[in-house]
Image (cartoon, rainbow, N blue to C red):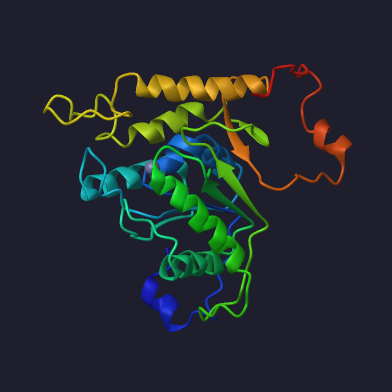
Amino acid sequence: MQPAKAYEDNPKRIMKQPLDVLAFGTHPDDLELCCGGTLILLTSRGYRIGAVDLTRGEQGTRGSEETRAKESAAASQVLKLCLRENLGIPDGHIEKSQENLLRVIRVLRQHRPRLVLAPYWEERHYDHVHASHLVAEAAFYSGLSKIETGQESFRPYRVLYYMGRIGFRPSFVVDISETFEAKMRAIRSYRSQFHGGGDEESGGPQTLISSPLALEVFETLARHYGAMIGARYGEPFLVREALELSDPVAFFREFPDGKLPHLFPSQ
Ligand SMILES: [Zn+2]
């Protein structure tokens, strides 16, 4: 990670190699839960992948801010990210303020990712709703040169939305069959959050994800979206715009000849 001071000293001169993907999470475990299989798949193929968590998750019911930071570092080892940063926006109070927009714009202009991952804008937890709008708007405004941050303006090619708890009809599903086990390992790094992490023995309050059923639910979801594409496990994504293909024949040739056409309903 670029030290903040060095960056502030000379923001225009320091131009690192751009990232292929920069994934934004609302709380430190969201990326592992919602798109961890895809991130691991992409890092294993040699792409430069970074992650930015907007908050430190200090309002989480179980575990402290310090525990969550250690758990996030352990999960990042599994994900093999180029960088993981935390913007330190107050948990439970994600505003689409000018200050927060500029925080995200600075990160985008620093790392210049081709693709941005953001939470889907419809969610049970309102932090995720606000994070979705904050990241998408920052991705747009980052391209306006008159918004001054001391950096060159930059707009990512696309924002891809990952799914939380509220479903959508996916624009595409990534086959994560080969990385599913690693994804679950990354999720289990957040020991204080999940059943078996220790808090239940000491009487810590139960939450939706600390239930013994939670990991089974995530597996079932991955199987459901995998079934849509004829794969064992999948992660869904939504793109607001139409997806263009320059060569439909080449695109569908990517899949092996032996792969059966899948005729599952898409929702
Ligand atoms: Zn969250």
